[in-house]
Amino acid sequence: MIYTVTLNPSLDYMVAVDNLQLGKTNRTARENISPGGKGINVSMVLKNLGMDSTVLGFAAGFTGQAITDALSEMGLSTSFIKAERGMSRINIKLSAGEETEINGTGPVISEENLECLCSRLDGMRDGDILVLSGSAPAMVPDTVYGDIMKRYQERDILCVVDAGKGLLKNALPLQPFLIKPNKQELEEIFGTPLHDSGEVIACAKQLQSQGAKNVIVSLAGDGAVMVTEDGHIYETKPPKGRVQNSVGAGDSMVAGFLYSYVQSHDMEKAFYYGVCTGSASAFSRELAVKPEVEALLAQMGR
Image (cartoon, rainbow, N blue to C red):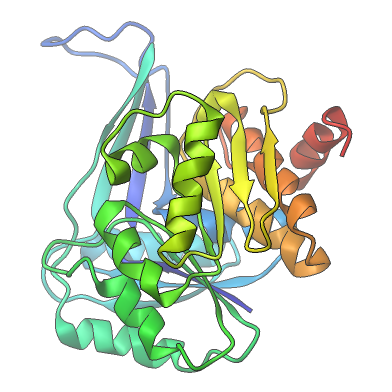
Protein backbone atom coordinates (compact mmCIF):
# COMPACT_ATOMS: atom_id res chain seq x y z
CA MET A 1 0.00 0.00 0.00
CA ILE A 2 1.08 3.55 -0.69
CA TYR A 3 0.45 6.15 2.02
CA THR A 4 0.71 9.85 1.18
CA VAL A 5 1.08 12.48 3.89
CA THR A 6 0.02 16.08 3.26
CA LEU A 7 0.63 18.07 6.43
CA ASN A 8 -0.91 21.26 5.03
CA PRO A 9 -3.64 20.39 2.49
CA SER A 10 -5.66 23.02 0.71
CA LEU A 11 -8.56 23.88 -1.48
CA ASP A 12 -6.94 25.09 -4.68
CA TYR A 13 -8.91 27.83 -6.40
CA MET A 14 -7.59 27.88 -9.96
CA VAL A 15 -8.51 31.02 -11.85
CA ALA A 16 -7.77 32.14 -15.41
CA VAL A 17 -8.09 35.81 -16.36
CA ASP A 18 -7.57 36.82 -19.98
CA ASN A 19 -6.47 40.40 -19.33
CA LEU A 20 -5.60 41.02 -15.68
CA GLN A 21 -5.90 44.68 -14.68
CA LEU A 22 -4.50 45.42 -11.24
CA GLY A 23 -6.63 47.69 -9.08
CA LYS A 24 -9.76 46.97 -11.12
CA THR A 25 -12.56 44.39 -11.09
CA ASN A 26 -11.64 41.38 -13.22
CA ARG A 27 -13.83 38.54 -14.50
CA THR A 28 -12.65 34.97 -14.71
CA ALA A 29 -12.42 33.21 -18.05
CA ARG A 30 -12.20 29.82 -16.31
CA GLU A 31 -12.21 28.66 -12.71
CA ASN A 32 -12.02 25.42 -10.78
CA ILE A 33 -11.87 24.39 -7.13
CA SER A 34 -10.24 21.12 -6.13
CA PRO A 35 -8.37 19.55 -3.20
CA GLY A 36 -4.69 20.40 -3.26
CA GLY A 37 -1.42 19.68 -1.57
CA LYS A 38 1.52 17.70 -2.89
CA GLY A 39 0.69 14.36 -1.26
CA ILE A 40 -2.96 14.69 -2.23
CA ASN A 41 -1.92 15.32 -5.84
CA VAL A 42 0.20 12.17 -5.76
CA SER A 43 -2.79 10.13 -4.54
CA MET A 44 -5.16 11.65 -7.12
CA VAL A 45 -2.80 10.84 -9.98
CA LEU A 46 -2.24 7.31 -8.65
CA LYS A 47 -6.02 6.91 -8.67
CA ASN A 48 -6.16 8.14 -12.27
CA LEU A 49 -3.55 5.54 -13.17
CA GLY A 50 -5.48 2.76 -11.45
CA MET A 51 -3.54 2.40 -8.19
CA ASP A 52 -5.01 2.84 -4.70
CA SER A 53 -3.40 4.76 -1.87
CA THR A 54 -4.35 6.19 1.52
CA VAL A 55 -4.31 9.95 2.07
CA LEU A 56 -3.27 11.22 5.50
CA GLY A 57 -2.75 14.67 6.93
CA PHE A 58 -4.53 17.37 8.90
CA ALA A 59 -7.85 19.05 8.20
CA ALA A 60 -9.45 21.99 9.99
CA GLY A 61 -12.60 24.05 9.70
CA PHE A 62 -15.12 24.06 6.87
CA THR A 63 -12.36 23.98 4.26
CA GLY A 64 -10.90 20.86 5.85
CA GLN A 65 -14.29 19.17 5.67
CA ALA A 66 -14.67 20.24 2.02
CA ILE A 67 -11.27 18.70 1.21
CA THR A 68 -12.21 15.44 2.94
CA ASP A 69 -15.60 15.26 1.24
CA ALA A 70 -14.19 16.00 -2.22
CA LEU A 71 -11.54 13.28 -1.94
CA SER A 72 -14.10 10.76 -0.72
CA GLU A 73 -16.32 11.60 -3.70
CA MET A 74 -13.34 10.86 -5.95
CA GLY A 75 -13.06 7.42 -4.39
CA LEU A 76 -9.87 8.07 -2.43
CA SER A 77 -9.32 6.56 1.00
CA THR A 78 -8.65 9.31 3.54
CA SER A 79 -7.50 9.35 7.16
CA PHE A 80 -7.27 13.00 8.18
CA ILE A 81 -6.65 14.17 11.73
CA LYS A 82 -8.87 17.06 12.79
CA ALA A 83 -6.95 20.13 13.95
CA GLU A 84 -8.89 22.30 16.38
CA ARG A 85 -7.31 25.70 15.72
CA GLY A 86 -7.48 27.55 12.43
CA MET A 87 -8.68 26.29 9.08
CA SER A 88 -7.26 24.40 6.13
CA ARG A 89 -5.84 26.62 3.45
CA ILE A 90 -7.40 28.12 0.36
CA ASN A 91 -4.65 28.55 -2.25
CA ILE A 92 -5.18 30.78 -5.26
CA LYS A 93 -3.58 29.70 -8.54
CA LEU A 94 -3.91 32.62 -10.95
CA SER A 95 -3.22 32.21 -14.66
CA ALA A 96 -3.02 35.57 -16.41
CA GLY A 97 -0.30 35.41 -19.04
CA GLU A 98 1.98 33.89 -16.42
CA GLU A 99 1.18 31.80 -13.35
CA THR A 100 0.94 33.38 -9.90
CA GLU A 101 0.23 31.56 -6.64
CA ILE A 102 -1.09 32.94 -3.35
CA ASN A 103 -0.92 30.26 -0.65
CA GLY A 104 -2.71 30.36 2.69
CA THR A 105 -1.11 29.62 6.04
CA GLY A 106 -3.10 26.64 7.33
CA PRO A 107 -4.14 25.51 10.81
CA VAL A 108 -2.16 25.19 14.03
CA ILE A 109 -0.90 21.63 14.49
CA SER A 110 -0.22 20.41 18.03
CA GLU A 111 2.16 17.72 19.24
CA GLU A 112 -0.92 15.61 19.99
CA ASN A 113 -2.02 15.98 16.35
CA LEU A 114 1.40 14.81 15.15
CA GLU A 115 1.34 11.83 17.50
CA CYS A 116 -2.12 10.90 16.23
CA LEU A 117 -0.79 10.97 12.66
CA CYS A 118 2.08 8.66 13.58
CA SER A 119 -0.25 6.28 15.41
CA ARG A 120 -2.24 5.89 12.20
CA LEU A 121 0.95 5.23 10.26
CA ASP A 122 1.91 2.56 12.77
CA GLY A 123 -0.30 0.18 10.78
CA MET A 124 2.09 0.23 7.81
CA ARG A 125 3.63 -3.08 6.86
CA ASP A 126 6.98 -4.08 5.39
CA GLY A 127 7.05 -3.27 1.69
CA ASP A 128 4.65 -0.31 1.99
CA ILE A 129 5.57 3.10 0.54
CA LEU A 130 5.32 6.33 2.53
CA VAL A 131 5.26 9.60 0.57
CA LEU A 132 6.08 12.72 2.64
CA SER A 133 5.32 15.66 0.44
CA GLY A 134 4.99 19.42 0.63
CA SER A 135 5.29 22.13 3.24
CA ALA A 136 4.53 21.97 6.94
CA PRO A 137 2.07 24.24 8.76
CA ALA A 138 3.33 27.02 11.01
CA MET A 139 4.82 25.85 14.32
CA VAL A 140 5.63 22.38 12.97
CA PRO A 141 9.43 21.90 13.08
CA ASP A 142 11.30 21.26 9.86
CA THR A 143 12.57 18.03 11.40
CA VAL A 144 9.06 16.56 11.11
CA TYR A 145 9.69 14.33 8.08
CA GLY A 146 12.91 13.02 9.56
CA ASP A 147 11.14 12.42 12.88
CA ILE A 148 8.41 10.41 11.16
CA MET A 149 10.95 8.37 9.21
CA LYS A 150 12.98 7.66 12.34
CA ARG A 151 9.92 6.07 13.92
CA TYR A 152 9.84 3.44 11.16
CA GLN A 153 13.59 3.10 10.60
CA GLU A 154 13.62 -0.56 11.61
CA ARG A 155 10.88 -1.48 9.15
CA ASP A 156 11.14 -2.18 5.43
CA ILE A 157 9.24 0.96 4.44
CA LEU A 158 10.21 2.83 1.26
CA CYS A 159 10.12 6.55 2.08
CA VAL A 160 9.77 9.22 -0.59
CA VAL A 161 10.42 12.87 0.32
CA ASP A 162 9.42 15.77 -1.92
CA ALA A 163 9.82 18.94 0.09
CA GLY A 164 11.71 22.20 0.42
CA LYS A 165 15.12 22.92 1.86
CA GLY A 166 14.83 22.38 5.63
CA LEU A 167 12.33 19.54 5.53
CA LEU A 168 14.36 17.70 2.91
CA LYS A 169 17.80 18.24 4.44
CA ASN A 170 16.66 17.00 7.84
CA ALA A 171 15.25 13.83 6.26
CA LEU A 172 18.43 12.91 4.36
CA PRO A 173 20.24 11.17 7.26
CA LEU A 174 17.29 8.73 7.45
CA GLN A 175 18.17 7.52 3.92
CA PRO A 176 14.95 8.08 1.97
CA PHE A 177 14.42 5.70 -0.94
CA LEU A 178 13.65 8.62 -3.26
CA ILE A 179 13.78 12.40 -3.18
CA LYS A 180 12.54 14.70 -5.95
CA PRO A 181 13.78 18.26 -5.71
CA ASN A 182 13.23 20.57 -8.65
CA LYS A 183 16.01 22.75 -10.07
CA GLN A 184 14.99 25.80 -8.05
CA GLU A 185 14.96 23.81 -4.80
CA LEU A 186 18.37 22.37 -5.65
CA GLU A 187 19.72 25.89 -6.19
CA GLU A 188 18.32 26.96 -2.82
CA ILE A 189 19.88 23.97 -1.05
CA PHE A 190 23.34 24.57 -2.51
CA GLY A 191 23.13 28.36 -2.73
CA THR A 192 24.26 28.61 -6.34
CA PRO A 193 22.71 28.81 -9.82
CA LEU A 194 22.83 25.59 -11.84
CA HIS A 195 23.55 26.08 -15.52
CA ASP A 196 23.51 22.59 -17.01
CA SER A 197 22.64 18.98 -16.33
CA GLY A 198 26.21 18.20 -15.30
CA GLU A 199 25.95 20.62 -12.39
CA VAL A 200 22.52 19.22 -11.50
CA ILE A 201 23.88 15.67 -11.47
CA ALA A 202 26.81 16.73 -9.28
CA CYS A 203 24.38 18.22 -6.75
CA ALA A 204 22.22 15.09 -6.86
CA LYS A 205 25.28 13.00 -6.04
CA GLN A 206 26.02 15.27 -3.08
CA LEU A 207 22.50 14.64 -1.78
CA GLN A 208 23.19 10.93 -2.13
CA SER A 209 26.35 11.36 -0.06
CA GLN A 210 24.14 12.91 2.62
CA GLY A 211 21.80 9.92 2.68
CA ALA A 212 19.37 9.90 -0.26
CA LYS A 213 19.34 6.61 -2.18
CA ASN A 214 17.77 7.74 -5.45
CA VAL A 215 17.39 11.32 -6.68
CA ILE A 216 15.13 12.66 -9.42
CA VAL A 217 15.48 16.33 -10.30
CA SER A 218 12.67 17.86 -12.33
CA LEU A 219 13.86 20.56 -14.73
CA ALA A 220 10.49 21.85 -16.02
CA GLY A 221 10.80 22.45 -19.78
CA ASP A 222 14.29 20.94 -19.80
CA GLY A 223 13.04 17.52 -18.69
CA ALA A 224 14.55 15.62 -15.76
CA VAL A 225 17.57 13.69 -14.55
CA MET A 226 17.83 10.75 -12.15
CA VAL A 227 20.80 9.38 -10.26
CA THR A 228 20.16 5.92 -8.83
CA GLU A 229 21.54 4.14 -5.81
CA ASP A 230 23.57 1.79 -8.01
CA GLY A 231 25.19 4.67 -9.92
CA HIS A 232 23.09 4.80 -13.07
CA ILE A 233 22.30 8.22 -14.49
CA TYR A 234 19.23 8.81 -16.65
CA GLU A 235 18.54 12.08 -18.42
CA THR A 236 15.80 13.11 -20.81
CA LYS A 237 14.10 16.06 -22.43
CA PRO A 238 10.33 16.17 -21.91
CA PRO A 239 7.90 14.92 -24.57
CA LYS A 240 6.48 17.51 -26.92
CA GLY A 241 3.33 19.37 -25.93
CA ARG A 242 1.94 22.75 -24.95
CA VAL A 243 2.07 23.60 -21.27
CA GLN A 244 -1.32 24.67 -19.97
CA ASN A 245 -0.87 24.37 -16.21
CA SER A 246 2.27 23.38 -14.32
CA VAL A 247 0.51 23.00 -10.93
CA GLY A 248 0.89 19.41 -9.77
CA ALA A 249 3.32 18.39 -12.51
CA GLY A 250 6.10 17.50 -10.07
CA ASP A 251 3.69 15.54 -7.86
CA SER A 252 2.46 13.73 -10.97
CA MET A 253 6.04 12.76 -11.75
CA VAL A 254 6.33 11.16 -8.30
CA ALA A 255 3.02 9.33 -8.79
CA GLY A 256 3.98 8.05 -12.23
CA PHE A 257 7.36 6.87 -11.00
CA LEU A 258 5.81 4.96 -8.09
CA TYR A 259 3.04 3.48 -10.24
CA SER A 260 5.60 2.04 -12.64
CA TYR A 261 8.15 1.04 -10.01
CA VAL A 262 5.64 -0.90 -7.91
CA GLN A 263 4.81 -3.00 -10.95
CA SER A 264 8.22 -3.38 -12.58
CA HIS A 265 10.93 -2.56 -10.01
CA ASP A 266 12.75 -1.12 -13.02
CA MET A 267 14.24 2.29 -12.20
CA GLU A 268 14.74 3.38 -15.82
CA LYS A 269 11.21 2.41 -16.82
CA ALA A 270 9.79 4.15 -13.74
CA PHE A 271 11.82 7.30 -14.49
CA TYR A 272 10.39 7.67 -17.99
CA TYR A 273 6.88 6.86 -16.79
CA GLY A 274 7.27 9.59 -14.18
CA VAL A 275 8.49 12.14 -16.73
CA CYS A 276 5.55 11.41 -19.03
CA THR A 277 3.05 11.56 -16.16
CA GLY A 278 4.40 14.94 -15.06
CA SER A 279 4.24 16.18 -18.64
CA ALA A 280 0.68 14.87 -19.09
CA SER A 281 -0.43 17.00 -16.14
CA ALA A 282 1.46 20.04 -17.46
CA PHE A 283 -0.17 19.65 -20.89
CA SER A 284 -3.68 19.53 -19.39
CA ARG A 285 -5.87 21.70 -17.20
CA GLU A 286 -6.41 18.66 -14.97
CA LEU A 287 -4.09 16.10 -13.44
CA ALA A 288 -2.75 13.34 -15.70
CA VAL A 289 -4.87 10.39 -16.75
CA LYS A 290 -3.50 7.10 -18.03
CA PRO A 291 -4.31 7.41 -21.77
CA GLU A 292 -2.50 10.76 -21.90
CA VAL A 293 0.54 9.30 -20.15
CA GLU A 294 0.72 6.30 -22.47
CA ALA A 295 0.40 8.51 -25.54
CA LEU A 296 3.42 10.53 -24.39
CA LEU A 297 5.37 7.33 -23.66
CA ALA A 298 4.69 6.20 -27.22
CA GLN A 299 5.86 9.57 -28.51
CA MET A 300 9.17 9.04 -26.66
CA GLY A 301 9.46 5.49 -27.94
CA ARG A 302 8.99 3.94 -24.51
